[in-house]
Length: 297
Image: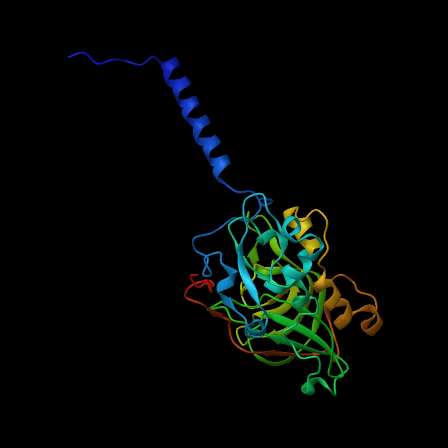
């Protein structure tokens, strides 16, 4: 029996060819840090935000809308994209093709939308008071009980719930980074710009209100995340023109220069910071999307 023998030069060429194919496949398959997020089969909401139930939406007529390829919040809603983003508690990076969002039947119904009360009695005797409603995924800033402004939030997901109770802002850090979690490429600690610490657990884990992604549902490891598109552009290179800056706004309101002096850009302890009340439980996920069925003629 005769065995064929491959020349050494042929083996080298074949090896180089196979290596090139493998490297090319890896590059194409591995998302970079600047990639736009895409649908994930592990998502508890199955990429359908119409399944996330917020009690305050019961009195607003809305319908589910699937985002098609090449569509974005801006292309779908023009200048009203900000209203729809806030209504869904989602940022532009996460409103990608494949996601289903809630869209009001009448845009006028959500122009002044907030699930929080305009006056909150427990905050009446405080100059500044922060209320976080986990069920609604929303944060409100109160001055002597009156709502000064409010914003969507992303609190802790299941098994990583944000602690509830009455706390106080004790530390500010405009340039904070996570000591536990890294960015998607595992190259740097996850940024937590405009961070306000409100609690330290018995396990010595700190909980902050800070800038982060908002995917339209609870998503953090226990902290409370707010819009900050400047941070997103710096880290993910999107969106190109930052608009939503709620984390920065809250930081200036709760721990700004007028109240506490110049900010060093490093962690600073605060005396008598605003009260933070965290209430409620995780929003309910519906078993199926709330599809409206038209009666037959």
